[in-house]
Image (tube, rainbow, N blue to C red; front, top):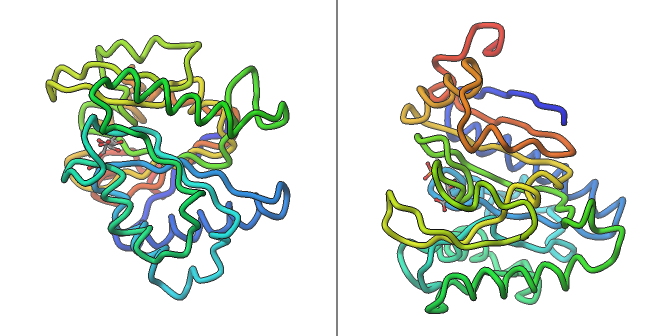
Length: 250
Ligand code: 6PG
């Protein structure tokens, strides 16, 4: 794994730089393999990034016709629910209508049984990544996975103390998240860590303390177990990076 830290003045510049990075990764993946497989992060941080990709002429060359979108996690709600990560992406990124519907692979989180939703998504991934060259050690190789980080050090829906943290065989699982009193559906660490590139998008003062603990103190939180075979790139704004040592912030 190669790990790098990039710090930008504010969340708007961070979003623009992340969009540029994704355009670069997408172009390279299509040139090399004829497609770009991207798993999206939920939450609020990526909204600006998704909106830029959908609307800003700077990113008009994004190879949507060759791009396949997935979600690294989803809340156990219907796709039209305010909490839905799919809905957030639908309103920001998919509104451009540029990506063929058949290339948008959402998690069916409306199913009453979250475990069934996880199993069905896992089957979707197994079908899509069926060719041997699309797997590593039995896990799908995504060209890029976008992740965020919560103030508690969770990423995707891999929360401190949750059962999914220990999963090393399954590709997608559901697990109960006590702090939210709900089930979540999530990629497991082996899937995340098979990626060619993982972009960690972290912004805002509410992440300052946890970033300090994770990047400076090396404290053991779920986000530290993101150790991809490929590149791990932290893309931060100054506010989130405020307590990182000078040599990191340069
Ligand atoms: C989710 C995300 C989650 C998110 C972090 C950060 O479903 O909420 O996958 O892991 O990335 O909680 O969320 P914010 O970007 O809203 O701070």
